[in-house]
Length: 253
Image 1: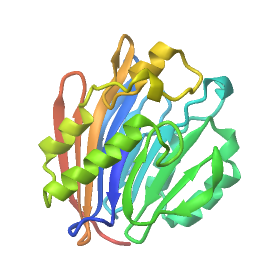
Image 2 (image 1 turned 45 degrees about the vertical axis):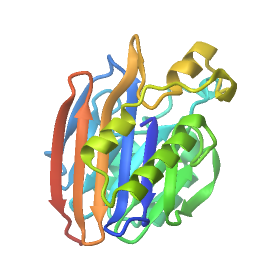
Image 3 (image 1 turned 90 degrees about the horizontal axis):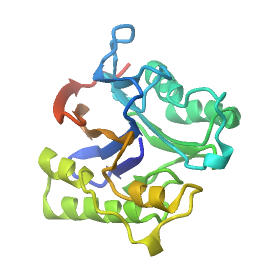
């Protein structure tokens, strides 16, 4: 994932309302969201190159998502796939806190990442670039390729726009949320971060929806989890624009 906007425990109906874009090289083989044959409780896409996933949910109401932390100078080609951190949580039974405590002990084995993991009791965040795992408070949050709620233009603007959608409509529609994720407006040069890539790439990566030769937004995903345990995941894959929607009534172990 490269942009995750979410409202946690701020909506009268939804415990979690999330909208996210996954940006990746077009040539990297990927399978769209589906229930996994070998782990039928898991609903997620699949990265066929790394073997993991970038975002997923389960029939038990578990949720996890990851973004890369952009720092090209520290990238190691021999590091394990970060996507395995998401699939391991989804297939496991540990609490979010217990799982991230384990991840934090070997977090430096991986290239830079941010991870969100949650269940019906709590939502937790951890980055191997800063600090210890922490439980998230209710609020509207944004995560891209730096730390949670960092002051990048796309994160600040995304949090604000999601807040406006929630204030204007008791329940933002699927169309509203996908339109938000499809925004191609780039930030002004004066507002761009310096993450170690060229100025031209900083410009390309500053929009919600990314289009460039060889790399861009591959999928947009909405996750809604109600206080009653109803869960929906809606995914739009690009460039074809195919939409897949799944409704799940979660069952607690």
